[in-house]
Length: 542
Image 1 (cartoon, rainbow, N blue to C red):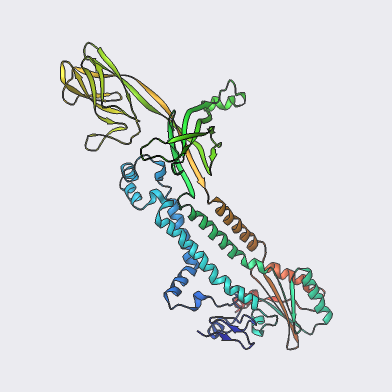
Image 2: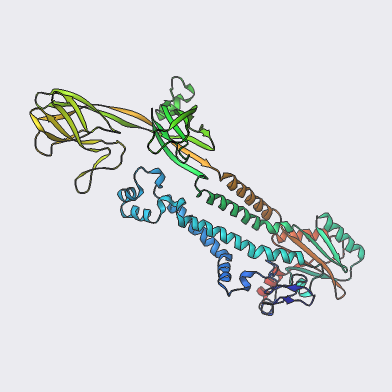
């Protein structure tokens, strides 16, 4: 498509409504449909999205350049983010997600998992939504800011008569003394206007930089979204849970098998109203209140490389007391104290003969790693046929386990004795014993249980935070730039033996009109009228 040459000599891109240089209306259809005030939103410049619509590239560009499309993408993303908070994300559950959600929430949980809402912020479609919002911001900005910049840069001091008459603020005055003209020019400069003169005409302009505020916002949002997308790159963002039992050492996740953490001791302290007199009344009402969650840990670093299955060689790095809001930091990682639990560690039973309560030995079962057979001597032994760490009865009535954590352990024992060499079978759970093959002569009697504290840590690393912070700062600069300043222009030209005054601003028309009153005070210039209000008055009279 060919460019359009205006009568002033300026060559405008195809699709331009108002000449970039003089402001003459170039689009006859627009001129017929809009006989009153000019639409100065984008200076009548040619936007690609409103000019070209033939190729696939044009259609994609036009789709993403629509503000409505951008708003709907944001709304869809917000709704998806809300849905992701209905059920816990998979990082906070113990079971495999394909089992947990259907087991706990039925058909809704299954659908929740199938839609990828269990790992919302890591799902491909959520990442695609973020990318589409970023693309929309880029295209929206380029579609508007480039032609707007060219139009503002190309504007002449002398403007077309139709351009001046159809500004919202416009007025005429008779012949003006040169001294009054100089007074107005001086007042404009005092008001920090940039004044340009050409052939006795004047253009005063200030605050043009405020027009770029929305686009600076867009740049900040694009950088912010880019920082958010960096979190999907492995190693840039880590937010993992780590449970370590007292006395045990565990590999710190996402550190490439480089760092290990040993939990030496977990400490739970409560406020003592006898010692903490300041909180005595509050403690009387609230009861026990936790004062400190603390894990005494040792950080280790692996030395060299180890073969699969081989125990790594560890070098002690440091001892540290991890408390709430006092994390262990190393190599860009932070380990926070986030939770704790006390879980069953072992259970002790006695093999006894029913009726006489004669005991034939004790056995202690490690609930994390039980043995298959426990020899008690003299021909007495106990064999574990099945073990259910977190026991429950399934829908079919068969015993099953909800998880591998020993929250509610249950066993199926085979008790072998000299008089019962084939053994007797017994199902034993907490406060429950079942003899499925008939009444037994022997039974397993519960003797005791030991527990062990388990510290819950959150391992975090965020290499993208500086990008997000930078995007936020740039966004706020754009907000301030666009909210607290405005772009004002005042044209004074000699036309047909008169002096015409026209003015335009992108916002705060009241402020512009008050400023014109101050600038024109004490001169023979007539104060221009607000034609928008006069148009409304004329329509009301009709």
